[in-house]
Length: 339
Image 1 (cartoon, rainbow, N blue to C red):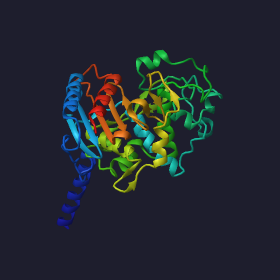
Image 2: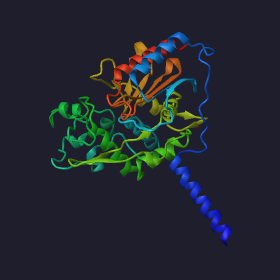
Image 3: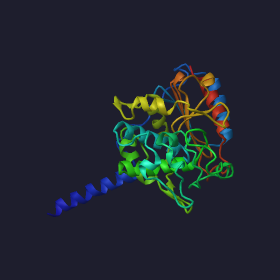
Image 4: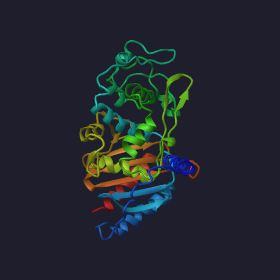
């Protein structure tokens, strides 16, 4: 019996280590020579110099599924802040396709409320789709808000559901609650099993997510920690219409719907889809989109160039972070360097 117990113990240790370390069977990224692929080496160097001046933790540039360039520590996991919302959007696409979530359900249908002052009857008419578009009209205090969110939050009842866009953590956090209630799944375990594992993320495990609560709201935030090389896989998944190695991980219709602009925003030419920002099509071509997080976290897809660009910024290395506008400038430089 002793050999059997020893083998069982070894198996359990291996399984535990696999959960902690991420996907041990993931295939590493392949790299290509930029000059051989038709890139302007001079313009790429200019982009690299500009990126270096921003002091990110890592940048990855991927074209046609292969790494053209990478700078910094692409394996270092950082809190990607509001990129979490685009990650949740992907889970919603799967849940909607499986019939577990109905975008037309109202908060009243779902029995969603919050701490006092509770939601009004008018606010409870907001639908799941309204929340995905940041158009709920609910301006209740929320977890993980920035100072700008708190200062600029409209008055309660000032806009009817579906009529006004406001980048609102209440919507995003309540969507996390709805996902957990309707699917019966933990967000981070669900992401690990349904997305990270199928696309071969090298570093992510369910332990890289946590819930953060705020005393004025019942709905916690759900920040993720990702490495740049794993974030690039997520970007590649969206660039390829939700497919990975022949498997449809996220419905193609959801990828298109979530990266379609339904609202103009307060960020110039950027629009907003289902928890994704959209980029100016006159500059980047159709379908270009951005998952963006505070401090410079970014996953951009540029279909016209078959391009994914990721930036991560660890606040312990760069406390000031990188402005979104500066990342967009870097993205323009990289798109100009690409064939």
